[in-house]
Image 1 (cartoon, helix red, strand yellow):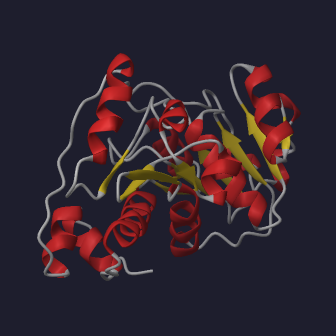
Image 2 (cartoon, rainbow, N blue to C red; image 1 turned 45 degrees about the vertical axis):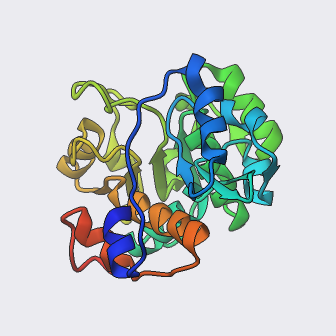
Length: 252
């Protein structure tokens, strides 16, 4: 996506994927201070651990407590979070009305971005996590309420966001096993941040029971565009990112 954006903006540049283990994170981040480096993206498990290695944080990144985008300027590293606005853009594109309560599955960095984003819209949010203490700590910081699955009034929930890793590495996994999706309102949306595979078990089961489901490609494209704008100042059309993903004609 980013290499397509460099081409669209007629800018010299290259975007490369690098695997960094947790013990090597500090050295990898220090390498971003080299002249000519615009910055980087981070994914699991580095989004929260990286904060200690950065010079400044955006208000969103500080509030969320997680960074997915690093911007390099004159030897200084600035941490930002484009996951949150990227999610909101993807939900708007998917047709989520935004008025009913939302349930967020997970309590890691991605969940923190989701809760912060949804709460910024004044939305009621319930957080469900296999470790209840982590959900409680998250909501104590960002708002919303930690709930056990059986304590959620599902008939009121208009949006489920899977911000956990369930379904990412194991196709048989789902964060909601044996779940009755027909208990949700008919217009409810299930949004799975996982985008590989294109249809997770969570999505397949929701669709089989007559509910809408989307994978995380929309969020991926929108957060990437926002990161690219922060690095370069150039604002390519979102269609550049969707086309690079093989998802043309999905303009917001």
